[in-house]
Length: 484
Ligand code: PHE
Image (cartoon, rainbow, N blue to C red):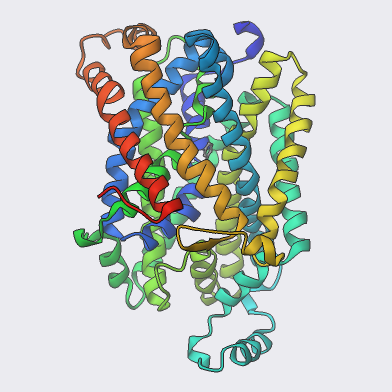
């Protein structure tokens, strides 16, 4: 079996692939808007705690389970735990399918912005006058000062059916083509070059952003915590964001773990992946908030935050530099998203190739098509189709279809998966087996501080914290109630 599955060529290869999975739209698109909406620096602190303390041990657990079983998430749970545990793997696979369905839509937006900034005339603010006139006619109480070209543009862009269909289809085809070739070959090489490039561009832009008026207000919002802003929504949003950003709780890392070499150190690899993911999210915030305050935007703008804050800056850089840097930024964002979509598609594909001996190519075509179709209502729920845009009301808020998918499969299914993984490892598979597996590639693991920490976290702290937060999430979201 192991020979047939293929594996990463080296520890660096695994780290590159796992970090590629972790770093994506979650860091650059989702993290800034969640931070902006849920308390700025206070959110950041809770987030860092969740990532390193609560989630990292779960990451170690996922990778170790996958490496031990050499199987997809369903097969791994079934093999290590017996019959019914396989269901946990299935929940993870379904969550992965649903997450990819909306993620691919957002990746399509990023791809569209890349083309329009790099090669189109988005930076020249096409039809600005018409947009302004339309805005004033729609909002008689507002003046031109309230109008934001890129805010208005983003709103109409995501409601546009043709562009979104074409670009998200293109993105899904790209993902499918790479997964069809086998994940190990492509990603290692790319991630090693493109991720550092992304960091360089972001750091360069941060330096530029810090010179702008009001930048310091943004830095204060992002780095000086106001603890009165921490409420249970901050906590549950930070926790689910940590799971999402670290690709945790649905088996992506079980799957990648199954390709991980027996001689390699799982604990240090997990620490590096977590550190890289956190660093890139942190840098994204450091870039966005100065720009947001410079432009007088509200940090709680929501999912449009980066799509609105960044293009205006690229437009200021002049036609050549704007295209180059703006186009380059969105292109790198697309690559970051691609290494994540690859890991998401790999999960159901490894399931059908392992369990049903389906050919890899057939599995890829099947799931890429299915997921694209399942993503259509999310795509159309951003203004294109009114009933999908105002899909349901719960917890006192009307939500679009995409938000419902995020609520169910990211905010709930991922922490739930993390909870079940910790309980599974601690009380069914048992920590000593985990330690045995980690010990391969990490000879002094047993008896180390790391082992004690992971044991305590997986058997007590993580399940307890995640269970309470999860209960609170459900109460808040669906019933507008709270435990506290
Ligand atoms: N971690 C990815 C990101 O931040 C998203 C993802 C979630 C990937 C779950 C795989 C599994 O963009």
